[in-house]
Amino acid sequence: QLQLVESGGGLVQPGGSLRLSCAASGFSLDYYTVAWFRQAPGKEREGVVYINSGDGTTYYVDSVKGRFTISRDSAKNTIYLQKNSLKSSDAAVYYCAAGCAIRNTLILAQYDCWGQGTQVTVSS
Image 1 (cartoon, rainbow, N blue to C red):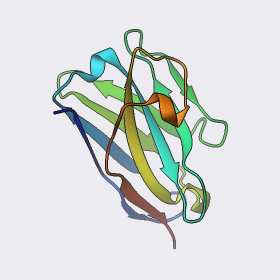
Image 2 (image 1 turned 180 degrees about the horizontal axis):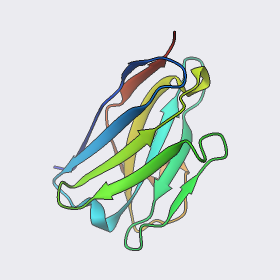
Image 3 (image 1 turned 135 degrees about the vertical axis):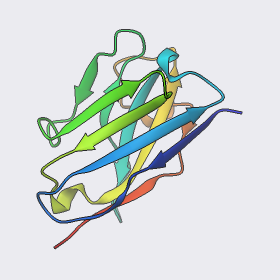
């Protein structure tokens, strides 16, 4: 059974940092494009960043560029999202998602497997 489990969310002050983890079971993330999405209350789920399968090329939306970093640990079959200089606008439930045979996309419908989400709260 394909499964993604996120962790690492929590409460952080503005300007602080968090590292989210997305651990996979039942399949190897090396062969999947993996993205992080987020959904704030009353808003639609939006894509934030992806890392392609194979060459590991990445893409960040402008709002997080320079502050967030996605990385892959193949040995642990885990994707990480390092989030620095957090803002109140970054507060949301963060979801990781994996898609097979896709690249260069943050279209929700193209991702096959989703985690349950982890809450990130940014507040002083």
